[in-house]
Length: 97
Image (cartoon, rainbow, N blue to C red; front, side, top):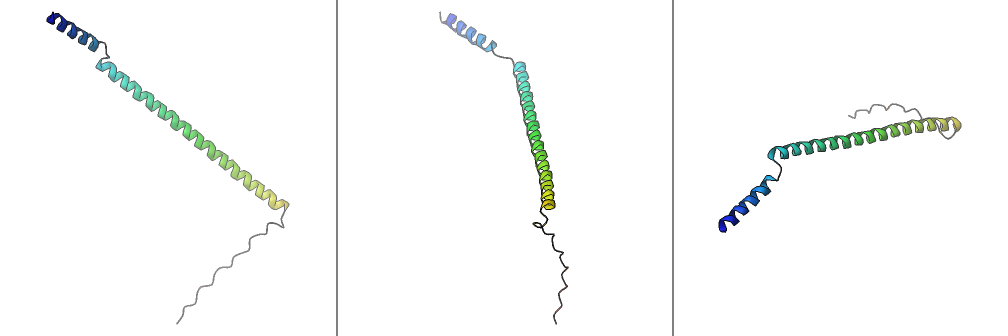
């Protein structure tokens, strides 16, 4: 009876071991997972770059609109915006004795 129980236990262990994935299947799954992760990272980086480009474009357009608005306000209200005074060059310092 002990021999039969031992044989049965060994058979169950062998059956359970054979049901798992093989080393080749595990390696294929690992490679597929790493490719999926790399693709996901590339998509995230592309989205971040697209967002950064959009922000830069909006800032550029705002800067242009601000300069146009400033130029228009200078034309409409010339008394409010006085031209900058010319700066005289500094005289060289005299050397003391």
